[in-house]
Length: 326
Picture 1 (tube, helix red, strand yellow):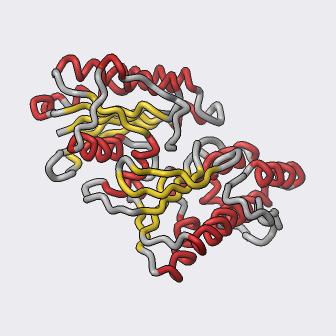
Picture 2 (cartoon, one colour):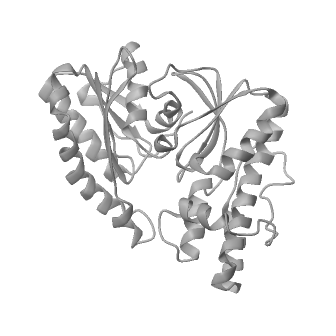
């Protein structure tokens, strides 16, 4: 079995995955949403202190499996430096104590592998990653063959939801709150402009839309917030669809997936399914419980890395907070 640790942001998580079967033997995650909600977003130093408390407590529950562990995996990039170091420190301690090798996992590869928890991996794959920190499209041919073909020029899809929620005073995290509010609103009430509509550049941008929403919120009454939320969600999603449609004309997908925390958005999922139909492509979605950050996805990557003998020596295991997939 492999023990995996995730601490890239505000979720403390540990999982144990069986190498031979990909079976998830153990998985526990402790969220910090309540602690950060009063600040309207993640406070890195607070998150690090909470990880230092939560991770050892979860690890204690894994003790019955220690004798069966063949490796320990940990997220090393990208993420918040002060929170990543908590996971890495614990992973090093486990590696030394049990005399097992270390596996350094890229968090974004983890999101791709959230599709394959307790399953065999399926490639090639065109992936849309939408989260609080990233919006990008990747062509994935395998574990070590991943190419980013487009990404956001500024704010990410998920980040824009959080910021719009903050503008309305709705708390953190903003994605689920805006999604719930949008269900009650009129998507056509506010005619926000679709970002980068008249450019052929295959990229994403949410700063302009975010500013347009801010101006609308400043003039609106609270009873209008549901219409603003609905209109924002509609245009934010339409922007993704517009760019994907152009990309698909030249690069028709065989297998297409949406991953990341924001991939749990039901409106986005339904709209993506519609634009995929003409290509007769297989669409793959993570289970909702594995869309957000978790250790199960890190463990699933680690299984394939273990089989390929991709290990990191103890002295070379370092965090790389800003690292992205090339």
